[in-house]
Image 1 (cartoon, rainbow, N blue to C red):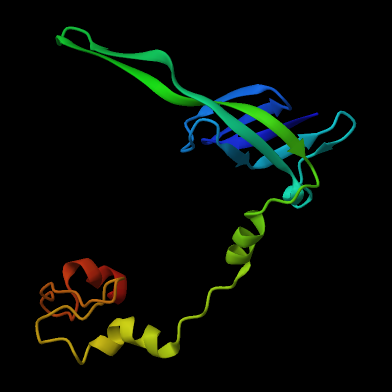
Image 2: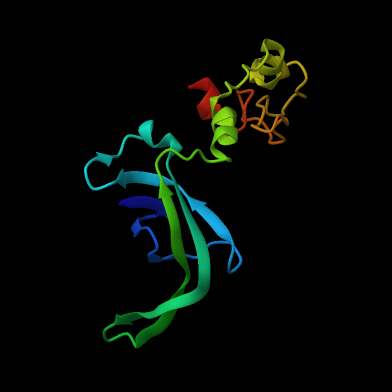
Length: 175
């Protein structure tokens, strides 16, 4: 039985009671972490459907934190006297895979699902009207840009000659 989990922007194949070296996690040594499952296989069937994997979980215990091998970066431009040598050691975490379960529900998953599933409230017409330049035109001083920024504040730039918008907003609102 094995699973493929996503961590640190990478995918790692893990087996039960095995060790896995992954990018650094913010967890203390001895702490238990849950990793998101992308693929599950029990030897007979392979499951990769996200809906079917909703109950799958991989629990792992942090064994140690370490640095990876040094990667050298050497930049060189011939006949220019330019040479730069840099090194990098990636921070890694070694985890021991505890158990891989297909039917065990995660405790945190339903909370995240509810947050994502909740539809965003539509902005009220009054709030939208306040942020549009048309509603602010009357409040704008002569010679000041009539546009409203994304944060709801009015643009403080001077309007272009023959326009009610500054150079930044003229293209956006006047076409």
